[in-house]
Length: 383
Image 1 (cartoon, helix red, strand yellow):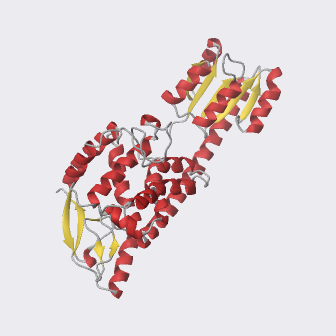
Image 2 (image 1 turned 90 degrees about the horizontal axis):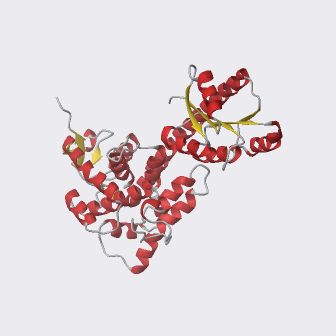
Image 3 (image 1 turned 135 degrees about the vertical axis):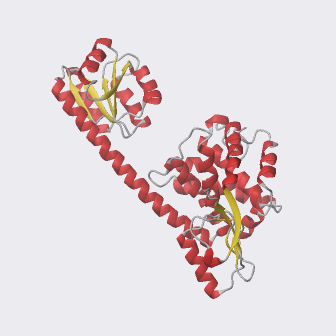
């Protein structure tokens, strides 16, 4: 990622001085005042370092850098103050809003040294975050794989949900971020409290009692409550809390202020993917499932729904094959559920096979017979 620096001051002359001093050594942007600075965060960021004057109209430097901290927590924030503002600047440092503060007049060499220290701090924070995210992601994948073996009705959906979301992100111009991937992996975490009978009826398209419907309405809130207690998972929890919220504001939870585009985009995408998956598992083909969803007025974000439609073109790159258990390999996708000799589902339709799942199937096959051949989706290799 390119390391960019943003200088914010209400004096055009000061900004021109920064341009002359630093443009040869750094990739810099300038903003005339805090309002323009906040706009620059959205249009030209992310920034590794943000340097701000203290005394500016409407929004002072401490308030501005506090907002930077909220929008770009990894950015190193440097405050330049007059002598009278030193106590305020020291409080900002102690509160964590500012990485360093410098007093006016600030020698060029000192500012250069401080910017380089800010860049180094930003690198360290990004490396730490990357390591934490990769470690957490690896742990979550293992956890979900274990859950999918113990509760295939609920967690067997995870790999299907991930594939749909990844495909939808492209036509929407979105990156398949760590946040979106993690939300898809944990979208069913609240279902651990649901009985398998209720889940089987839900995904099989069978009618549910009023009490069963009420229980199902609660599972996103249960999952959100669990996750929001974990550091760094608060945003994931919010996404899952609203994953069953309809675009028109109806549906759980009963939060009247969350409607339309105020619903997190990841929640809007999850709502579409979850409903689409439920219709598919109940026996509908993709075109039929999409037609039903189009007729549900007010339920879905139109942009996200159109993105789902565009993913159908990718189907042409796959074919369905029937193979023996020994012929299966990782990364194949199950086109139908795998059952044991009693007709009990071991692994649900739509899951991507992993080494762990293959080992589990081999273990089950040694104890009980498995229905073969097994129907899988395999990528077509063009020659």
